[in-house]
Length: 428
Ligand code: SDX
Picture (tube, rainbow, N blue to C red):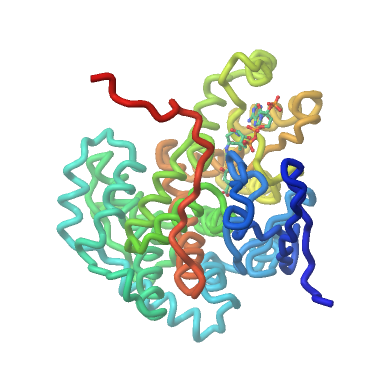
């Protein structure tokens, strides 16, 4: 008697039945293995938006949407945010365990070596208009990195993949800060080995050669925790984009550039910028009902940015931590009466009393409050999604490495249900 659990599928057209294997993981729903379905039945499956589809095995991140639980390599996000640094979490995502002190020092030292970018890239960045969206700069510059740091993804060893991952994690903040400096006509600031990852981020963005710049430890710690919360999130749209690009053997820089492009969308990482713009449009508490009515109107494409989630049908644990951080950061940075934050709190309060949002389990997600903190740190709205991309590079790199290391990985190539014209001849 085979111990393999199966599901029986019956074709009512032919009366034939098919046993499909069940794949079970550590946590979460089991998956029906349909890889043999087309060969055995001639049928495809259909799942627009991949609501019920597992695209891969992964040991990196687990989300329980019903419980509002998020684990990185088994550790709850709340504990990692409280007890670890972003560098420790990046190592954890890449290697599966938290680093020893020695491993962490070596990791940070190697990231310092990889943090400088080819000086020619400064010309590339200065070639953009000053008002270019920094996500456009990031997509372009990251996609060009293989022309400066050649990699052949088809013959990469695990050591090569590790180097590529570290180059990406190290260079992303430098490119991001350079794009910001270009947008304000300021001088390019180099990373410093004696600064932390987020300390460097703030220094490269806000210091100038003319004046001493003191990094505010509150800001440095807040950004570090925000980066932890954004580091990975299972097979979301941008991570799936990175995996799909990587499955064809594209080089890691091109794959991450594709992920950045996907993250930019307002339905995904672009929501954090859209939330601030939306709150500015709402501007006063008295306008909240009008915007909620628009969000509920099927004929209006407007949605409340920062609300809802494909997986979380409970409160996004990251949003809860960021909301708490808002109070602390605003208090410490002296903006405790930030009207935008007050408006955001009232908007959340009103939605959680409204049947439409309650019935659809629409809670604030990671993007709803993060912009409040970025703004308190002096980061401009059009850089919010760039911050998200910097943090998520650790997760994208870990997921890309995991895919590359899977001996069974193959090029991703979904099929379709064709509903175009039937075959016909050209009328000539
Ligand atoms: C991120 O996937 C991830 O893990 C992503 C992410 C990560 O870390 O990688 O968590 C980061 O992208 C967070 C999400 C950021 N996006 C936004 O905040 C944009 C606003 N949210 C929506 O666009 C929407 O909620 C999505 C895109 C997040 C989820 O879309 P789904 O899963 O396709 O849900 P849906 O569109 O089918 O919505 C179900 C119902 C619909 O109403 P009905 O057709 O049942 O009547 O809920 C409604 C939707 O109209 N709905 C909303 C809404 N979100 C869903 N109505 C008003 N405002 C909203 N924000």
